[in-house]
Figure 1 (cartoon, rainbow, N blue to C red):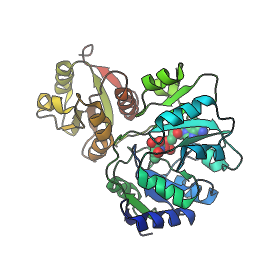
Figure 2: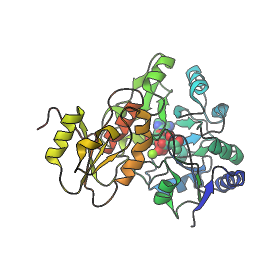
Figure 3: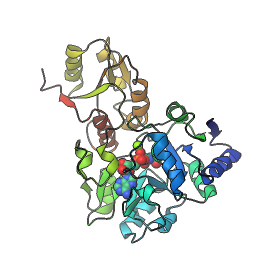
Figure 4: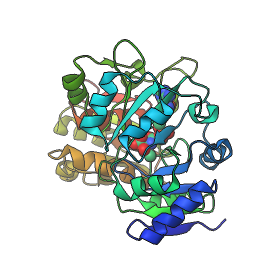
Length: 344
Ligand code: TXA
Ligand code: MG
């Protein structure tokens, strides 16, 4: 299959993308979080193609992307007031809500769950495509399963060229990490994945928020979790990733003591001078956490080379968007974190 590259700026390209989706084809779509691998979310055959193209286990459910917030009533039932409050505040935007699914949502989209994840993305071109297609679009991140998510059309082509009908180029994703997921089907809203909408913002609006154990640490593959995707190793380049925590100087000293050929460092721009001779790459500035979220996956992809066996990674501390960046990096590391201030 020849993968066409379409432009988010051309109306006829958006129409073509919508037509391909209606015909059951896969199309890479730009969103403000990461690029999605879209298919008609109501068409089981089209949805199965997603799992095939990604090499994704079928017990991992997909997010349905909507053109308008109100569309959630078509695919969800028993929608609580909190969901409308969140939609009013954060949609279109980088927030996904898990709600009870209506019967029209195919079981392969929800991986047999009674619930469905829904999101109204901010990127105008993609909402236009969804509206033109006239169906909700199931879309996981457009990477091969287990690899870092894709934040440019070039990343999507790298992973999916020849496997999908088209990719719509809308430039680099501004948030850079996947949406925040909050499950609203229990007594208390539960954070399943941190993202661009922060835990602090959710707590302020909702008054209460539980954090799922999958966010906090690696869980074994047999554990039943609410976001089935969280149990898989994610975002990993081929190399082993080790997060080195602690103050800048202590971390640099630790890395320098252990550094060998075939290794690399992923750090903040401010720390580049500390890692001279240690093959450093900066993914953004520590002073601007949003630059770190925007740059993380592209940097992990750059470091995904056979000659690099170990990556020492520096991770921002604290809440807000730093919490999401830390979550992705720690997942890439399989939660292997060394404290440079305590370790020899
Ligand atoms: O920002 C994003 O959310 C991107 C863009 C393309 O919108 N999409 C994305 O999809 O990250 P994906 O498939 O890579 O991650 C979706 C996560 C998975 O961990 C999955 O297990 C979880 O959402 N999920 C989907 N449906 C769910 C449900 N009904 N209950 C709990 N978790 C669910
Ligand atoms: Mg993903």
